Image (cartoon, rainbow, N blue to C red; front, side, top):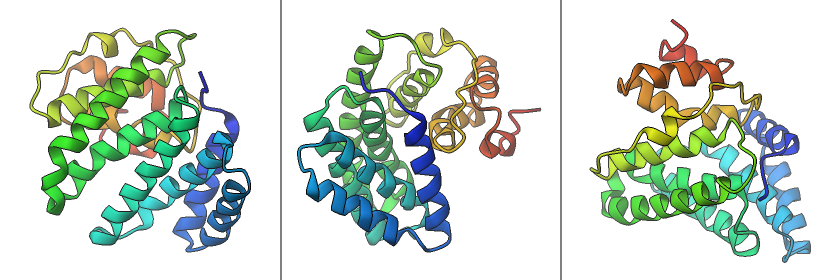
Length: 215
């Protein structure tokens, strides 16, 4: 299974900062050229997709944002066509599929299908990660699955999430997105153990402090 690397974290952090400064285009162009030069290389495709995901918070809500989300979802799909056991590509696609209906209400027609696809990605990801040595950030997959179940109106199963150890993830940049489902669950009051897990995994993230998880 292709797990998260330090280089992934550094790339996401670099592009996130560049996007906030309005200077991400050159990085995206370079990565896009590398992807086109090596069309069968899943790593080149992934680097470009990951960088594009890093720019999404800088895009204003609206049709343009929805179109960009959809394009990045498709970009992760191209990675998974070549490397179906790529952890972050599958998590990233599931995350964006869950974000479209929950954050972009004007496109509610897509809620059911996108959440169904997100749930399918997360089921497969949990199956894949069960076959390798556990990583602290695997908890985010379980947490996102709970969020998707809630958004879909299903009663979530918290057992896998509760079994996760609160060990620091140690991904300063990617931790900002990996902590999202746990922040959401903690803010919704889904059990005190979620707050403990959130603090243990992502205590270095500003989002954790903003919801009062450190209290």
